[in-house]
Length: 162
Image (cartoon, rainbow, N blue to C red; front, side, top):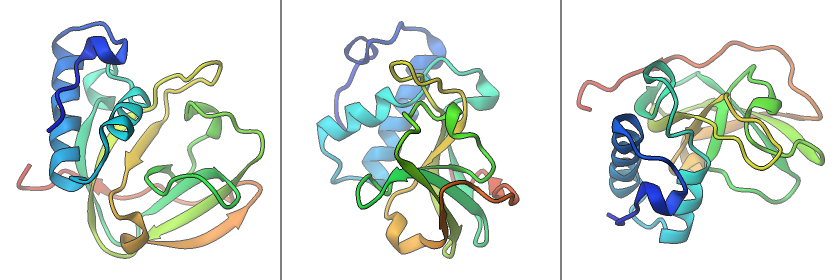
């Protein structure tokens, strides 16, 4: 596991940020062991480490059939960060211009890291995001378009073992 500090991330310390950082690092170590240190730091900077407990960093289980969404540039962008279907792109800490909407269905139940999006530059955060390891093997693309069509949110539950 990488030794990454709150100070390195530019985050003020405290009990919650420290706990959230440890949870995220444990998740990355267990579910994304090949993640580079630079990517790990980048992913952590996208997480609001001061979110209230109900919206804070946690490991959750996505059931088969759950719907996720993603806003990405055509032909580029990672397949790691997703959000609940129905979340506004203006709550994801991203620049929306030039991105298109994609909806995915969970085809294989999976363990993911849930967190609240951090603000990024002029882009506001606040929405829920999921980091989905090996998304290409557990998700199926079901819609691509300029904007989202209404759909239900995913079923999420805490795994028994975590």
